[in-house]
Image 1 (tube, helix red, strand yellow):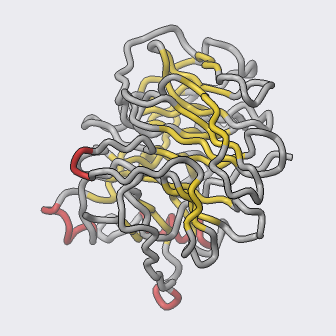
Image 2: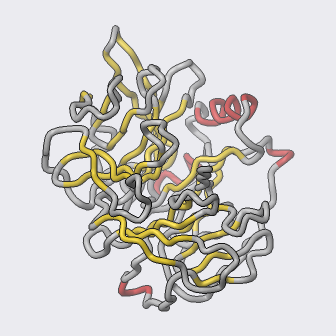
Image 3: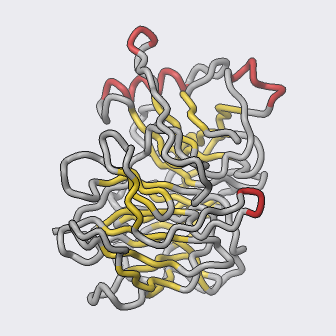
Length: 343
């Protein structure tokens, strides 16, 4: 049985930003900050029911914290406190999935783009030992990789680029074997620290397309084809953002895109899809600017380098999707509730 959980974490999580659709003002949810650790171990977190007790647990660096209290830290690889000013973390991203196929959730850890290989750690069950470490891949390029089942074969792929081509890294039939890269295009010259990528059905054909800051790759009928059609469209003319999300923001029946404009600067926007015949284009609608526009949008902060989740507080339903539409269309007001760790 395969289980995959990587939900947005509604805690004060290290280095991540969460964009959440607000319920009506009279029913806003209260949040309580839970401090997981006083030390710097990682830049990214994930969630999943690690111990199988029905409660979501938090994965942060070398520890997982048992829910629902999150008071007890369980070390699954050797913990080494780090100096924040040196930014040496070998845990930029964590993803949770049953990679071994034994019914227990394992943990995939990605380090620095240019420094660390990717490894996954096998959940031993109730044993208190450190988890068995498995090599996955040499490097994972791009600053916002996503673990998603893009080919719908019940096994997730890690979206990235390698040797100048976009595609994905995927586990093999033998869970312990190194992962392999599958390209969807001929080699180009993409920077290793690429900003802005996501997955979603742009053209409404039921298949997941790959979206990057420079455009989108159309998912063909033959998923394994190495010739996905690339539709050029520069979403951000700045540096580019982080995770890009595909959803019908304005409730008009087609897919729009949400993205930061500069992952290490300012700006957040949604891009409205427009069609002329078979040609798809996008119109930018800003949701947040810099400090000079804080009064206009209601909030302003920089370093939007980890947009990790776009979530609805009370679960995904039509009422809240409509609420998102109503708020987004009010250009003069803030449209999101933002939780971000500072310092």
